[in-house]
Image 1: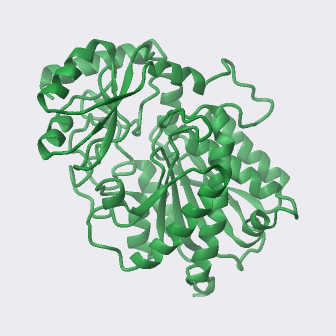
Image 2: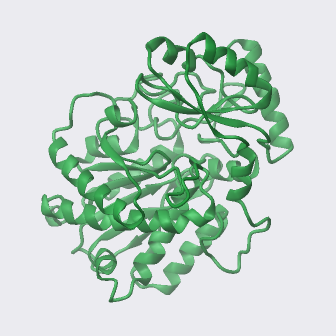
Length: 430
């Protein structure tokens, strides 16, 4: 992007900040397969940002399909780019604002009762977490870190048998625009705590796992998506004079390099990896918290949306992880269980070859640093009953069915991981 382009982006950002929230009336979403290197180069060269193009996942390799948001004033420009580069394209959303409106059916949030028929503010979510601590002896609210704007990154530790249970860490909504991830995480927390004796598989998870579940890692970005610009993905730290934010899932100190594979060196891009590893207080403080738990943890899981995938290391290379065969066994069992309830089909495999190359992600860092499995869910992007595409903007009526199938899959994940010896508790006494 040239200097003029940066200046225009800066001006538009200022306007959006003051006149919230930004609207996406008649913005369209196209799905574009990348078949050749020249096409990949052309798509990477498209300027993204407020009131411009946006990628749901940025173009990284040939063989990938990308969904791109196209504003009305750039429709002719997009057609010209597509024709020049022989890009095939499929219109999958006619008016993006309709998806945004469906996601927020209630104009005013009701703070009296926490539920899953809407998406809640960070303050409401945190208050609910503290209410669980007051209701359940096995629940402790824990602080996993701090955000640039001074918010606490809060989660819950659910442990009914201290010192006896293997540990699972769940990290959710590290990308701020992926709202259904935090909503699903809170639904799963509630279900673990309220499962009846007849719900034996869920009760077993609640009784015999030491859970650390963090619904909302990127709290600053989330509030920005709620109040200013729905498509914001990054943190909110200042970068240079005119840009903000770093992709917090490209910022962990694992095979990190500025502008490395699957990330960007351009500070205005959605996948900007930061000026250095752990430049962001969110990733730095959360990593320190995870390290403090290393004697307790057996598995690390990240919740993302939306690509219908289950991923594991590595993201920086096509070379398989040492535990590749066993990771594949766990993934296969997990996605098979996930499909059973609603027919949702996930693909699975290493990050690099299954979705795209990526460096600096938290699951890779955890696997490299702690030696435990680091898995990533990419939640479903369609209503499996109607076939309606919603991408990462899932309407609230999709929170429960998504969370139900994910919880089903966690039962299978734990069973297979236990069978393969990953869920022992011996290291807690080391």
